[in-house]
Image 1 (spheres, rainbow over the protein chains, first blue to last red):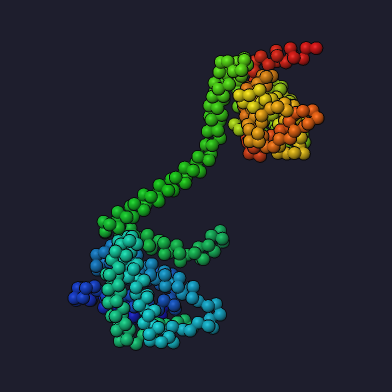
Image 2: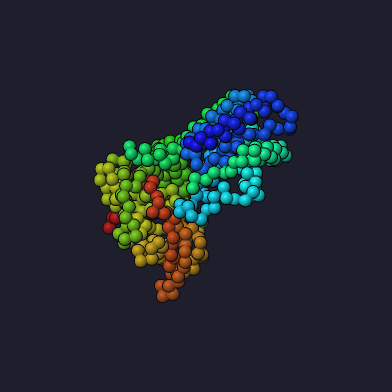
Length: 167
Length: 263
């Protein structure tokens, strides 16, 4: 597993927990900082490691926020979806795909936003355990997603990280 | 063994995901009331669905005994129905013996079936055989445990059939060349018969009880020389599918036959 991934994982998780414990609800929602390594490093990490790490990350956040297995379930499902997406988009010849690291700023921002939105939908789904609940709380989903996206974008800019591809 | 390893290697990540997700859902259900309620409901429904499927499989194996029970009930009902006093002057005393088909041969010109009841089951040669749909044939030969039945398509089969609540009668004369129809001859020229009419047994020779459905009239031809009509009858019994039969035995039939055969 990449060392960069671990560093980013540790920093983002620490930032999230510190924000949660010390800053709290200054904003309507706490941005999901821990999501960052799972957005950027989904390609090079092995699937089983990726899933396990997502589960462990979720459990740690759950332990601090007292939400049972909510984050674990959401992050695990998100990680599985990421890997599934990778598998679908992977070209066996690896010739025609344009690496994400070469994508433009706007394109990356959109992909980033979609990924964050997917995570938030999963998060609210497991929160209410129903699809209806997600639609009912769509305003919260969008606001939360926007907040997370904004802070993660700033965070990424801070560390100048780009999505990593394995080729 | 290697197959299992290959399977696990291929779908290992999926199982890992399922396992981790179950752990997190259990934790979630313990911590949050709503999630617990929903998961309980899912589990309840899921288990019930599973139990239903398992029941279906179990029911399949019970079908045989259920069939036997239904056959016995049908036998009782048939005997009640066809022994009502007085039916067209036909003496009472019809017995219905449930039987199962063990061998079939049809559409060959010498159609017969073999049933699993023989002389020890209380049946005699020339007894009538019906299915739940209608007439099947008559018993031709017997052993102790089995009986050979010639079907309605066998050229040796003959039966007087009639239209219910009328005087119209005719003889069944099978002809395998017009399968799946049979020919009914000697129907009077004046008889009012239409395509779609149902013909039933008359009960004259005590082989069949009166009123058992035989088939539906498919088409009609008129023979102007002999001034009769020829009906083409489509029998009700589906020979491809039927498995359960009833042998009709009348106590007085042999006495009647001996009288009929008197020169």
